Length: 232
Image 1 (cartoon, rainbow, N blue to C red):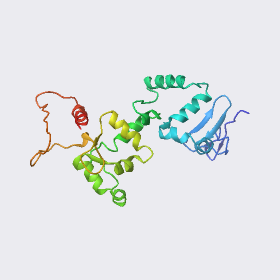
Image 2: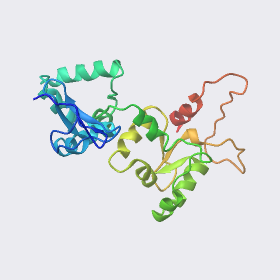
Image 3: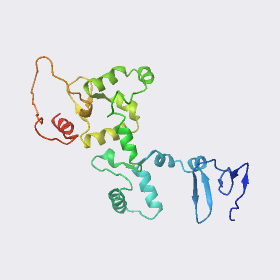
Image 4: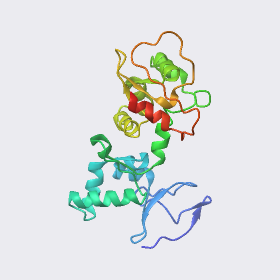
């Protein structure tokens, strides 16, 4: 049965949800099939296919990707790895394999990585956190530690990234040398070199020290921060 185009109260009903029968509002997305002319609104699609939530978020568990691959005829794990590698090289998705945690997720929205890294690496004067929420969660000292000494606590990382994905983004930052474990305090902390501020040291230095002087030569942006991660 082909859908006929007609309007009611100014709403075009040619495209409507075949699950609930509701016509879409302006700029509302419909998921449809051209061959069978079957359309479904976002709410109905989420109820029928709960895994859609992962694709909308942009970070998809690898086991779900493998399940979808089997459904379309790519059954062997070796073929799935080749397909993921190909799509990764073409820029259609991001699949990192340097750690088990990174390997277990596929990024379908690259913007997600930038958005989440910028939740940590940011200018405090331009991009402020929700201070009321920070105070309510008792993370005021953690926030001060981050911007004053470039040291992040696990609790604060879980606050900005959520517990489900904190390990993933920590692995990502460690592998790209944007974060390093800081084993010089009683509490487990993580150094974020990009947040270090230029200031003169005061007082006596204790322990091993080194000075890297690049004042007479050009050093690309970000290289020194990664060097600090390697040193730590």
